[in-house]
Length: 450
Ligand SMILES: *[C@@H]1O[C@H](CO)[C@@H](O)[C@H](O)[C@H]1NC(C)=O
Ligand SMILES: *[C@@H]1O[C@H](CO)[C@@H](O)[C@H](O)[C@H]1NC(C)=O
Ligand SMILES: *[C@@H]1O[C@H](CO)[C@@H](O)[C@H](O)[C@H]1NC(C)=O
Image 1 (tube, rainbow, N blue to C red):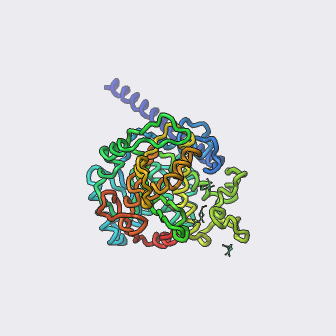
Image 2 (cartoon, rainbow, N blue to C red):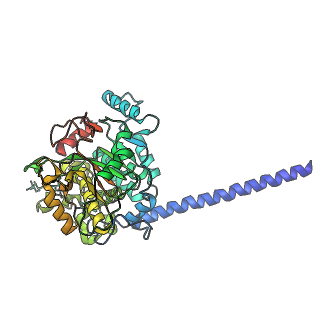
Image 3 (cartoon, rainbow, N blue to C red):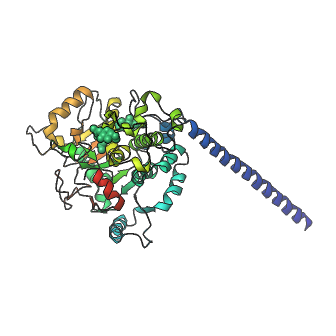
């Protein structure tokens, strides 16, 4: 009996010792990484996404060299696996959850469409406002400057834009605004449909560019899927839109860790920390001082040339407008970073495959309603400068593939707009319809040129 007891005692004390040791280990680990994080965020360098000559954006950050660089921190925390499947998940966000009385009834109908479409094979997450910060704190614990930038953004619309990029970069899937409805089952989206991808690969041979060599047509599901939002083929386009080709960001599909999102998050974080009132002065030591204007959203547009504009004024909720939003987090910067990434890609990777059936090299005919209209300019630009011009994505009716980036025609996410060659929601290419109903969004959309 006493033997048993002493054995038990020994067990108990062993267990207690183990628990104490574990506790100390865990405590040390947690406090260490916390310390590490705080320490790290104080000296993390914020590189600009312009002036990156010599850097291969597709390959960089694969093995982390310098953890005090935000680009490396992001690639390290969310490594990109081009072979992975696209996560079967839909993200949406709204002020309140569907269980709240304040959830708008029209959105309830749209929401149900998404849930039905998601069925059992897709996870459908609606993130209400009060879940956002805890969720991001969890996802981005390793990259504290990103969290800091998110918290300091002086307008809800900026946060709403930034949030979609952050969710997709960390977890992947489809993001779609609350005022959208899905039109087709997800397995008929070209990105998720083996048959459609196969046809696209079979029907198109890679378009040569100056340094192209042994192009490799990727076999996997594409990594980043976007549609065209605006393609105003008219002389006065600039009165209506910020970019001649504007990529759509109310619906985006992506694998986690995609380098386009990394560059976008990097740009937005750096711009925010330098432009907002709370961190403007502290962030001076983190930025590349030879390009200080790159970080200042007050230089991001015509204002850069306006000598009377108060460029050094820090951004607060009272002094930002639609122009800022467009070029800070919205479709303007989204389109710029995407095109810049594509051009960095072909400048450094000779094996990149460019597939674009809209260019049809066998036809001599110049159809003013097709991408062929720009054939000459596109091929000259590719052959002599290794540059994919915006024209490459103009007047598309079929998807184009650039490495692992699938670009869908305007009809995909913008059917029924009755302009810019968009077809109706009955068209095979129509996947999502934007109802243009958001409350706080509608104001911003007006500013964005709708
Ligand atoms: C962000 O991207 C814009 C558009 O390419 C560029 O003009 C700006 O210099 C970039 N800024 C930073 C901090 O990366
Ligand atoms: C330049 O900026 C000032 C101050 O914001 C503004 O009043 C003026 O209209 C701007 N000029 C132009 C040509 O945009
Ligand atoms: C945004 O930036 C672009 C390019 O730098 C510039 O042409 C435009 O005027 C800016 N403003 C808006 C609203 O797009």
